[in-house]
Length: 210
Image (cartoon, rainbow, N blue to C red):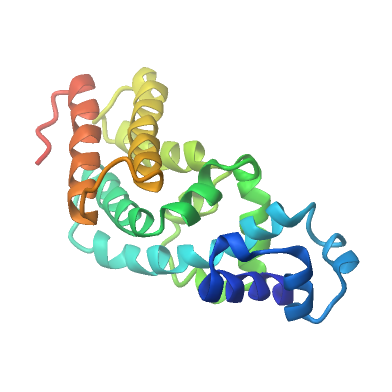
C-alpha cells in the first residue's frame, strides 16, 4: 500500500491532482494496475489515502497551538484555529479527506493509514486521539465539544446543533476558497471562520469568548 500511496504523493507534488492516472501510479510504484485493486477500491480511494499525508503538518502543529489553552472552550478553538490554518492552505486536500465520498469511512482508513505511517501521528495526548482518529469530521468535532459539556459550558441538548452549525460554517469557507469565490488571505479566512463559530457558541451560552 505504501508504494502506491507514495507514488500518488509524488505525482501530486510534481504535477498536481489532475495528472493522477492508474497507469502512471502503477509505473511509479513498480506494480501492475491489477495489484492496486487488491488494496484500494478504485483510484479515488487511493487518492484519499495519499491525501492523508498532508494532515501531518496539522497534526504535528497541534501541541504548539494548544500550549496556552486553559479551558475546554479555549482548547476547542485552538484546535479549530490550527485546523483552519492548514486546511485553507491546502483546500483540495482537506476537502478530499473530509467531504469527498470516502470521508464517512474515515475511521477505518485513518487507522490503517497510521498503521503504515505511524510517525505522522506524532506523540499526541490521550484526550486528542479520539478526535484525530474519529469516524468523520462530524464525529471529530463532536468529540472535542463533549468536553465543554462536562465542564458545564454548553448544554448536552445543544451539542448536535452547535456541531452541525460550526461544520456548515467551516465547510462553506473551505468550499469558497477551493472554488476561488473569495480572495481572503489565509489569516483573514481563519479569523472570519473562528469569529462565526464563536457567534454560534455564544448564541447557545453565556460564555464570553475572545
